[in-house]
Image (cartoon, rainbow over all chains, first blue to last red; front, side, top):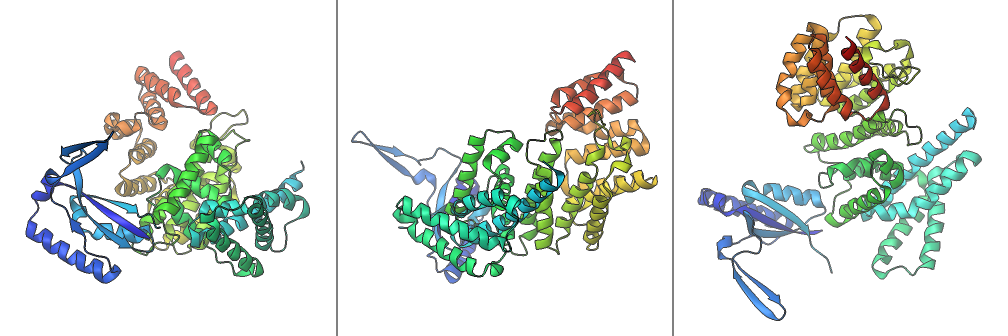
Length: 112
Length: 414
């Protein structure tokens, strides 16, 4: 099954983490991800302060400066994996360096 | 109904259940479609429960169920033109049924994997026990709802949702890797034990299914499927110890009888012996988990009541060990009750002092009952009355209520 792994982080907490270490951990993680599952590398997103949210309502476009969800932990990145079951997806969530600084939501992808 | 006929019906039901759970697990393993597997087998299982007690159990129950299920499924497929999306899937299941009916002796037993699926951490905790009861035993949503005190419609919906989740989220049908096994097995054992304690609480109810019996059956199943796991044996031993005392925990007039006052000649010796043997086997690997320790505590109670030996010090040591594993306020409470026997009520009251501020026990009936009992023993009548009144307010069981009302009356008159 294919899963999208949505990384949710607290931007402030993440900013306090030694960045070099985090980059190194992510490098190793992406390497392992590619070798073991053939997945493309995970994507890190810029902080939620850089987000813009667009909504179409009654033909009018509403552009908001800021993220969609008003929560402390924000979508901070994602990766997609193709594994036999949820258990392997949970294992990859545990390995992801960002899981230490927030939560990873595992979402099965609708197959056509 | 005669006792003999009843027994034949029970035996037939057991065989049907054994086959049913094995076939659901087998059919759902590849497709992860538990609901589909149940649908395929539901009518066959129902007719087995109807005809086997009268006609006798067929020589090959699995083949019998598969043949009937296959026929019903074909009928259903002809009646309603199967939705396109599910067609391939249904065909796969039908092919599997055909193949399995040819050689039913070779159907692998995937019930253990199915139990791990039902008790997976991605399944809502409260639904794990109902899922196991339904998929492995074939209990209806109505029966399960009765035991869990919620409406059959709600239970039905929640079961459907949980099964949908197994398929949608890709929860595997597999026995976990060695590293994950202890934690995941604990969830399976907890789900089975929860069924037992539910059944245990419903002492007077004869209409509700005998959940305790089902839980013990599941306990035996898991011990047979995982013979090297001491905790599985510990849990089964714990249930058998409790079950052995069933006949002694109520007086002929239905009144509640505490353990120390029970007539041990009413205990079921066969069950006690079976529990002791299991615990002995489990202990050979050294004490590991909560069930093993709890079973050992029950074993020490049996030894004391049977031989008169003072086993309270051993029980206190076991509770200390249990607390280190669980850090549960219930353990603190039970240890204090043992302490009252070993060192007197004052020591026990001091031991439960920290619980007074613990919100987790604020609505826990045994806490208030024990507290009231201990306060009465040290002569604090007014405080005892207050605590026992709260205990009464938290009790639903009529026998326990009568017992507490008696205690309150004594306090008022004394």
